[in-house]
Image 1 (cartoon, rainbow, N blue to C red):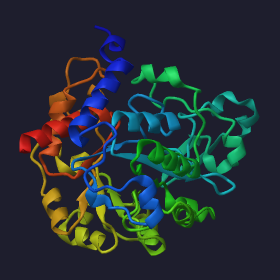
Image 2: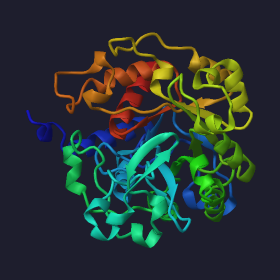
Image 3: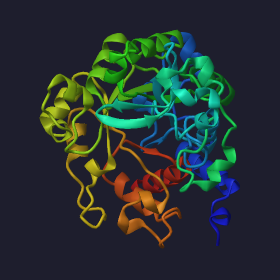
Length: 389
């Protein structure tokens, strides 16, 4: 059977609808007690992140397993599949607009290389200590970026997604906020967003601070309250601390490999590593200004030397003890992204035992998970919830 026969858009939609129905009761239903989007905006009262289903399925860069990431097409497809929350990553343009790209390097996610008028913009930069050569959002005005079209980031793995190359432009975050309001009215429910500030220390050094720009937009669209349908996330704790002084929206500190250090720590001379932050005292410090953490899945269940899942750590228990929710990242269906014991066959682009892997992760007690394939994650969440009942 070919990949195309194995993974058709129709089957994805069916899976997504089934998962949403199982978890939410209907593909467009809300958890009990969640206000209609218009009502929540009118009185300023949402029901907050604790009203979300658990496990919460967060569409990583939208439904990026099926559409080019960070496009309105990817975001809309994620909602259609039933995702509870849609993720955006924010980087600035030269003229200070916030746009949705996973990185400021847009070489692999747009057709910028096909635009001869921008050939001279190709350059080499050091971003958070890493040398990168390509085209960067901070060297373009918004009007210039809008002449580009989005494309699939990993076409070798997700060839089917290249069908949609060139269909969508790069969205601004303000466009996404308007889109979320419109979708909320149309679907009769709040559209939750999970918004990341990318490389905030780097951009602040360029005079393009992200937090103030983000806070202004959140206030403009009424998503600045503690019960607003939005999470704010960053790999730099100081960015979440800064945002906490500007808005009351819940913050999430992202955590990468145990031996790594957040870039703002590096710049400030703070010797702590992620391994320090996941200790009880580190989690207590995070809980003093944030409501959650977004650890890499390896911090929840480490892999052994063969790449197989080992014994869960105490991170879930320790974080919950401090009142923190956990939204680890990232689930993907393809063999190349799965733990070795859940890969099937030798084709790295083929789907493995994604449900088996998700079951192991959900059994740890995490509150949600970022997924490129939200329909798969919804079905796994439904299986997990049914097993508990």
